[in-house]
Image (cartoon, rainbow, N blue to C red):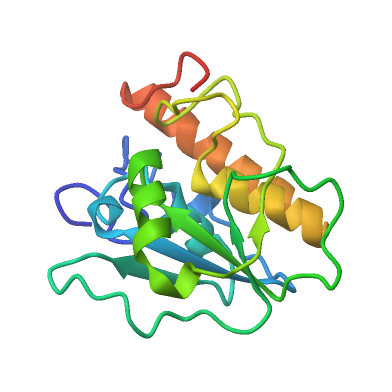
Length: 193
């Protein structure tokens, strides 16, 4: 651990009997490849749920964008990729053919809008809008109730396109992270948003 925070999950050990969040992170295998494009400003935030999703999902990719070099070339986006983004009518059934890869923008809502506009590799990708509503407890406030954290969006998208146990496991991990933040006095854990 550095600065009392785990180098992997960025959560602090609350006491000797309560280690960081790593013991709560499951190992999940999915059929759909998950690619998380994270804004570099999120890199060292414990409230970054994209990191948690990446740590839990075997084969997922986490790529930081807009760092010192500001480059976004060579992104790991393959054929059959869909961008999960809240625009358009939410899908109620999986697209056919099923996406092979789901791309998520991991940033504040303002940053995510700008990333979508500025990252040329995202242009032309089909959009997968989700019918979502955030839970009562949050790590951060969202502008609207249907806007959820990255890990919640990953869980909802996986539930839609492939089902299985991974969505519920990701939701349990998010609940554990929110609970840890609540007990530490951090995060927006009292209301929706």
